[in-house]
Length: 118
Image (cartoon, rainbow, N blue to C red; front, side, top):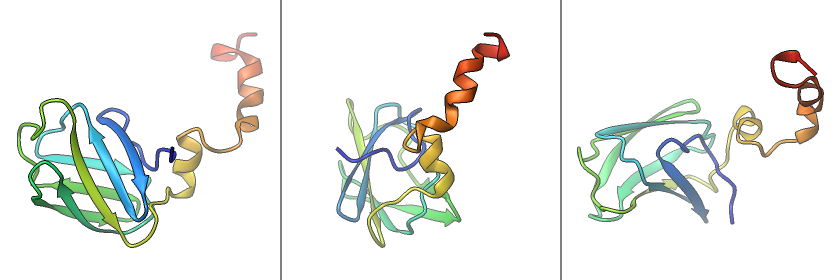
């Protein structure tokens, strides 16, 4: 299974196949969703339930998907397919933020305990 590529956990999960990032949306965001941490450029976004293309705007590592329906197209789990220019890749800060970096960088913090109390 591919790791998470960008921050999306408040809406659902994601998976990667080739140059496509699939957003598995459990908690529908309404007409727009914002993702942070995706380094790869997105060429197009499609709702798989309807085949409808939706607008994507990318500003650095921020991606905005607009023109979504007010209500989820699938009752259980709606999927938004993002076709990228290459294999979807997280920008450097997102790799660490998504817990895929070196866990040793948290060892001092973990040993101090919560709020700095041992």
